[in-house]
Amino acid sequence: MPKLRGRLLANESLAPLTWFRVGGPAQVLFTPADEDDLAYFLKHLPRELPVYVVGVGSNLIVRDGGISGVVIRLSPRAFGEVSAEGDSVVAGTAALDKRVAEAAASANIGGLEFYFGIPGTIGGALRMNAGANGSETKDALIGATGIDREGRRHSFVNADMKFAYRTSGVDSSIIFTTARFQGRVAAPDAIRARMQEVQSHRETAQPIREKTGGSTFKNPPGHSAWKLIDAAGCRGLRLGGAQVSEMHCNFLINTGEATAHDIETLGETVRARVKDASGIELQWEIKRVGISE
Image (cartoon, rainbow, N blue to C red; front, side):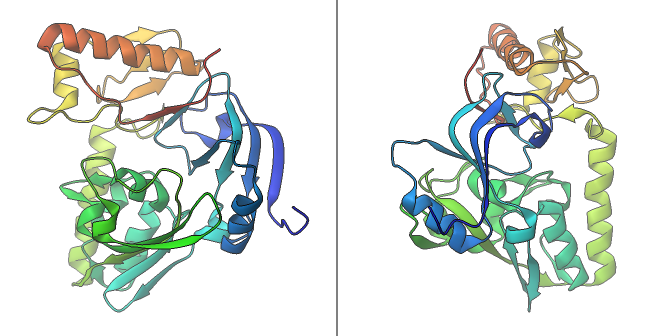
């Protein structure tokens, strides 16, 4: 790939790129210089090599054996621009969700305040239909763009995304690059007050200053995952260096020296105890990728 302009690293540790601060290396880590560079890379990459995309790693467990193939990380410098246009906001997919909310607020655009409480990137929000405080990505998205495994560009309207609870139906090989969101003109004071409510809720109800990965399990229909976990006696449960949060028991924490195996095994222990106590099988919301040691 003589025209490649991005950064290509071999056997690069992924632990510093995740909120849990655990996990093994990427066989190859690629950071594209821009959208054209990403398309060029994908077009010329051998088809047999697996590809995985990471954002800020806020909803991710990388297993201790690392990830074989190529890990692509979109940098905020190349894919993190955010701009307001009328009553809509356009964002690169490496932009933090929180930054999108802030850009909207600065332009007196309401309706995107919920992103202020989601600790991820827009790329992850598109892939998982991220939501908080009663709103989801599907409620605000106008459309998105992405690049497929052959380096071809695609555009998607909201309906193409096939959103459902914490998932979208777009082919997993698509790497999203930009998104446009619909807001509404609103009073600045009202927008800021709503953002403060979102932030206050996070600070008082979630262990945001810990090494964590956000909500661990999806809420089953008609139930709250944390209530099921609490009822099963798992609040504060420990395994190695991993612990179920005392503050919010749908959060797992790296207390300092946890391995990815500790965290994932603790999660599976919680799932088993909840199944025994309630008959309900919790589904992981956190993505778990890579090879177990």
